[in-house]
Length: 141
View (spheres, one colour):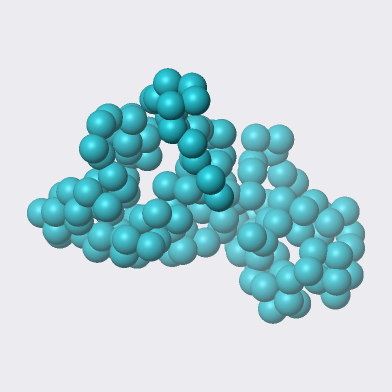
């Protein structure tokens, strides 16, 4: 992911776009588009609560899934549902597709849906409990 905060901090501290591009690992065109959008918005400094995700939403709102027409999912609800017996991510994705189509939105593909859930689970350090008696079943990789 592009480090919007780092790019803008370097720019506001007087670094050139070429220097920022070598330090940030992004192309000069990407750096230029970030800086141009920030100038259009009239930014001269960053606030502490601005994260890379919030900056991306403010600078490039057309990149957000809701603007593209995708149906958003409540990942906390999905995690709670997965704790139930015989519930799978595939089944939840099928239900999600039905809700998205009734709302006339674009549903995520199954692979993308799983990636978004994985990102959510990793971000919140969620785990799934294994309900069994110790030593009853052996699991081997």
